[in-house]
Image (cartoon, rainbow, N blue to C red; front, side):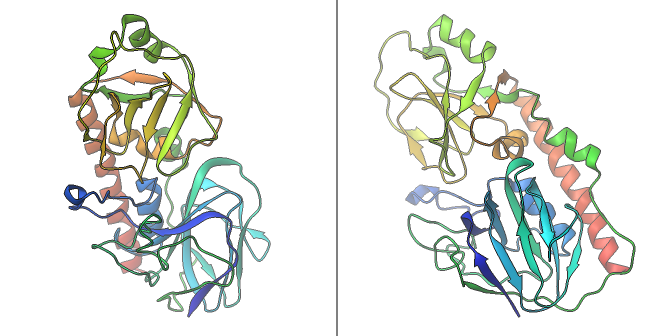
Length: 321
C-alpha cells in the first residue's frame, strides 16, 4: 500500500507540525508552512493532527495510489483532479486503486497539503516527521520528493456513505482574507527606526520577491532606515519575525527560519495570521497592521478554538461512518 510519485513538482516534502524543544541547540521547529491547512487536511482525512502530510507548491506533484485510500486536500487551490475528474477540497475523498492525483492550475494560494487516512510512513527525527533539508533528516530520506519515490501508506478500504463533512467556505474566506493587512506586534528594535520608516512600514505596501522560500519572504518596497547605525547581539527569532536587512529591505522569517539572528527585529506577525501569510505567493502585495499582544493572544486562542471544533466534528463524523 503506497503512493508512487509520478512527477515530483516544485519543492514537495513530507511535513508535520514541526519539532519543538531543540532551538537551544540550533535546530528550529520547521514543519508545515500553513499549520491550519495541514491540520485540517489530517482531521478531515480521519487522522489526528500529528500525522505527516505532503506539502506541495505549484507545479505540484502528481502521484498514483497503489491501493484504495481516503484522502483530503487542503490549503492552496491548485485545481486537484483524480483520474482527470475534479475533486473538492477540505473534505474527505475516496480514491480507488491505481487512481492518479494531479493538479492542473494555480487558482489561488501557494501551498497545498495532502492528508491520507491512517497516515503515511515517514522518518522521524527529533520527534518530528518534518523534512529538514539542510540536515537531510526527517520526512522522506531528508529530501525533496523525487520521481518514482514510493511512500508507504497505512490506508484501508474505508468507504464513506454519501454524507460528507467539510469546512464551510465562509470560514476559510475569513481565515484567508488576503485583502486584510497582516497583523503584527512591535519588535524589540522597532524603536531604532527613524520616524519616516516607522510610518512607511504601516502605511505602504510591500511585495513578496522571487527571492523567497521556506526560510524567509524577502520583501521589496520603500527602504527603511535606522536612526543611527547599531551593532546588535544575535537574539532569538521565530516564524513571522520581520527583520531589517542591511540594504534597507525587510524579510519575514518563515517555517525553516534559523533560531537566532543579528538583524534588527522590527516586528512579529501574529501566529493567527501565519496561515494566511504562508498562502501568499511570490509577487503578492501585503500591508502590516500593528496590534497589541493581548489582541494577538485572543486571535490565536480563537484559531485554536476553531481547530478544536473541526477536530470534534471530524471525530464524531468518523465514529458514526
